[in-house]
Length: 305
Length: 293
Image 1: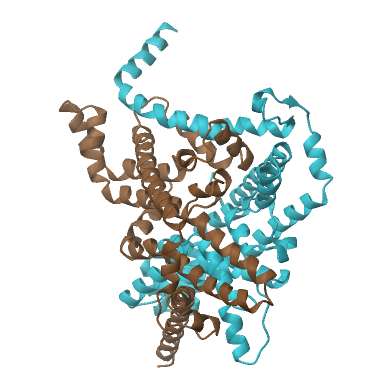
Image 2 (image 1 turned 90 degrees about the vertical axis):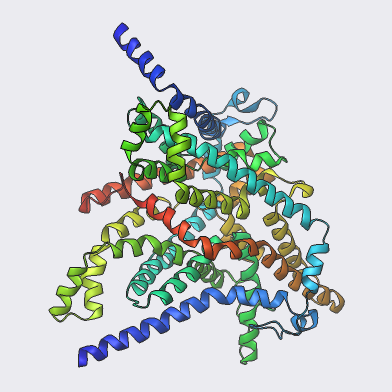
């Protein structure tokens, strides 16, 4: 025992500068990451502002029982899942296709310019994207509807009718993220052995055949990894995108867990209820991540952990 | 001959498609910029498409003369600079010790840090924490809580471990340098590109960040630029629904259309200006982050 203590003292003496560097970061993680994890307990308490997280009374599963009895909860849960699944359907293949198109281009300069431009939307704030999409898709003043009317058509309610809105939501998502998300796939394609392509060409394989038999299998591990990450976050949704894209007319589809937690918790100060909703989402998300990872490991050892 | 023709067709189609994609990426920006530079009359009669009609800076004059815009801009600049400095300091202090394999316990500490990527308290516990620390309606409330981005720590640590020769650090140690001096004099100067990348990630995140500002700040004089823009956009949305039939108000609203466009350009301009030159650094960061240990 004494030997162990002495060893620890030796390491601390030897590396005290390194340990000292870690004090502030660890304090940060403790206060801003782990304390909120403890704060999750308000889902099982009657949160009282004056008593704080610690002092509030335990009420067991009261708030979970009440969220499961609310229609609104099922609606926001359904919407979260629906928007994420649709988004996966549209936004997942898009960067792969882009990466393949880019890697088939031979002119270096044109390729560079294209890449620079298609990455750009990723760096624009969602608030700004929300404003831009209003100016493009608004029923009366939006650019696209102005053009449609000039051509003799009728305005399309891109933002104000819920089914149209779903596609606008997904389309804007593809526009914002496809370019940037293609980077990893471009890197993966660049890592494929060039001799494979040369051999295939000698054997008479065309472009599509080379893409199908060499490129796609070559980036399969990357595709699987990205797919796991996406599946794991099917029930979690950011706040900004649905908040700025949504409006009162499409509330039935645009109200998701994050916007609901914001409304119930921060606007109506129903902290315990909102925390319970958030916790439910985190737990389901964890289960999904572990599940998809296990499946991926079983199939071809492509899991991420 | 036939195969060569096929190859050619493929190339031509590929280039045409890519050009279309590039155009689709650009159009929204071009349109908004055109709107912001056109006269109120041209915007009102819906004559603006992909270039300014009756070039006019009136929208920008309106934006700049709005007494609440400049404070919001200043708030955004201030928080972005402070956030970047603080977060970079903390990220370096986290990544460097954890990149040293001889450090006892580095694995355990890494686990503690990585766990926070998979599970977090969530919106309400975060809010309760910030409010119990007295940081709501305070610019530090949107700076300190995002002090370290764990993903950025991973990027920097991976870079330190893979790209800084261990022999260099050992030699410095033999020469009597302590860890702090090694970090300052050897490791950091060799890491300039990746440090630039991470600083940009932090700066862009703060500049664009809306969620935490919306949650933690509700005093208008403390609004950041995204909050202000969101308010401008929402107010004109409201008027379009309630005041549709009043021509006088309709004109005012369309003037707002130009102001909206101008404020969007105003917020996005800093990013548009630096982005093309710094793009390769962003890509660089993603690549480092993607390498599995």
